Image (cartoon, rainbow, N blue to C red; front, side, top):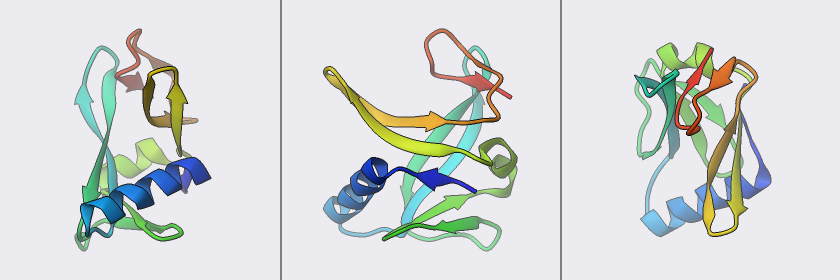
Length: 106
């Protein structure tokens, strides 16, 4: 199960509205960085047959089967700290993160 805070949900819905189309977001992981894995988030117009879809209020989170094991229990938030803002991922599967925060290890 993947959860989205109300702040992140509002941001995703606003971005989809501004974009003018879209089913929701595609969430996954890719191999990169110091610790091995990084989150990938992009807006998506359609799911593929092998995708897993998590229904949210007003949009869908689409996850590929390979990424699912890394993302189980993930919470997505949208935070603003000083001049910086963006999506934050809270993952109970993470064992540690690199110093810059760009990648993680499970």
